Image (cartoon, rainbow, N blue to C red; front, side, top):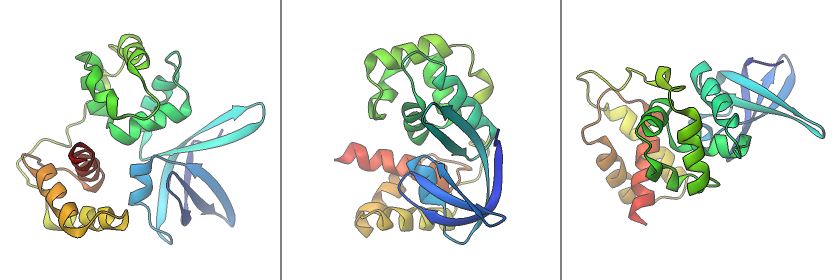
Length: 198
């Protein structure tokens, strides 16, 4: 079982990356938001899960062990496959998902591709009480969003085809009231702002 990869990013696609380790390239599926953080040539460590099917071996990559754990819990839910689980993780951090499940907030799943109302209900019912450890303290503290973090997110949005001004406005809205967030968190929030503005 491949549980971790440390190597060089050789290729980045919309939802996949190739990580070269010791001369061998591993094709890894990642979330769309995670892919935006990766840069060709950068050194990277990914926490992984290998899913074996009759006709395929598919490697899924995550930022950390907590994301992988949540992925495993999601795929244990009736009707939720790996693709849908990655869709959930692309839109919701583990702590956000934990809060949604505990509050039975089905509305947050509307933005997740491939997850309808019935599946959302199953996720909240079957995972209630299992995600309590997903809450993280990274969003607490008195620090505000740094200028470099905002700039990185604006650059990522522009790279996705968002006009500069629109990207800056989305990042500003996403930064309001935020504290101690990093690039991935702010990027997700800005993407949600853009999605709501369409």
